[in-house]
Amino acid sequence: MSGFTSIVLAAGMGTRMRSDFPKVLHPLCGVPMIEHVIDALTQAGAARIVVVVGHRAEHVQATVGDRVEYVYQAEQKGTGHAVMQTAGLLQGTKGPILITYGDAPLYRPETFRDFVAAHVESGAAGSILTAIVDDATGYGRIVRSAEGQFVRVVEQRDATPEEAAIREFNTGTYCIQGDKLFEGLAALTPDNAQGEYYLPDVLTWLKKRGLSVRIQVLDDADEARGINDRKQLAEAEAIMRQRIREYWMERGVTIVDPATTWIDKSVQIGQDTILFPGTLLEGDTVVGRRCRIGPFACVRSARIGDDSVIDRSNVEDVDLPAGSAVGPGTHHSIGPSQARCAWLFARANQQ
Image 1 (cartoon, rainbow, N blue to C red):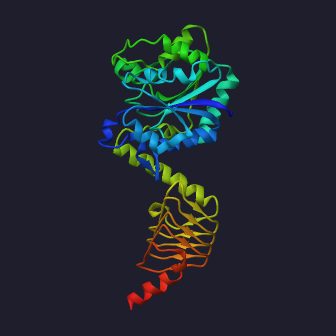
Image 2 (cartoon, one colour; image 1 turned 180 degrees about the horizontal axis):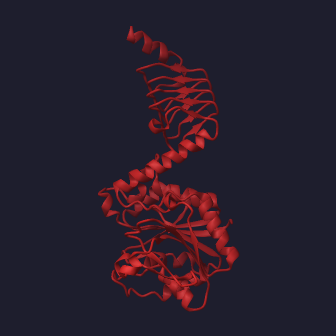
Image 3 (cartoon, helix red, strand yellow; image 1 turned 180 degrees about the vertical axis):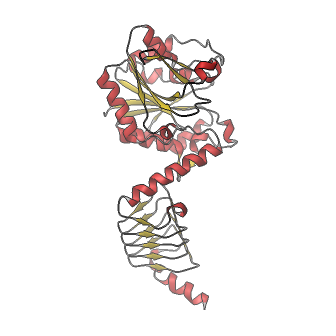
């Protein structure tokens, strides 16, 4: 499904991160987490992306740039209130609008694409993406009818003990027809324990009017992980790094010890290259074919030509021609014309 509109919620304070930086700008595998979300939406076919910003909005806008549109949420009054801020840009949209969070960077493009496509094919007014886990503490629970149909989302603070025991939770990702979304938003009230405008209440509003609301359950609950603190950031980082390693191994790159090899999302690696233990590839690094990197090598924002060897060295912001050899103990951040001298210089200093 291509050509849909998306809203990314990124106005939160992120107080549990205990940081001077906006939460959505904390890096995950070398890329700000919100950019993972925007990249996934773009690859899924989003034609228009509107980001709701608030806390340190200018930093978010400066980082993400003009690839998206922005609206500002001055006060934090809930997810429904955040989406209301997009009315000036999106009211009148009749097609599907996908809504998700800027601090949920593990969604795959195909998850968004399939979710929107299934929503459109079903003819539903609204769809909600859910996941099932052993312990859903902290998340809104999905209340279904006896027939398994959507009834409502109940937030943790509003849940009865029976509702709190439900294992299916709201991921915070929705797909709602544009005209129905803004009608439902206009009907929201902050009648709940937190005194906020809950976006899921739009789905309840649709249901009460006899319109179809469908539930789609995620196959991989890890995709729905939101990041609220440093521990969750580290957990998400581990998941993303493993995905990246698997991606390159499937494309002909040998990784001798995956547990000690870190590869940023933006890195490119040629076929038949071998990465030895303790290798870090960071930034916009491009590694050619048939290279040998490591052990214990750090390559940052460098271009490494085919058939090159980087052994126990730091290589940064350089362009190494094919067949280069950088030897042990070298910190190499010089121009490409000097690349072939680095290994000999390092060896001479060791003798």
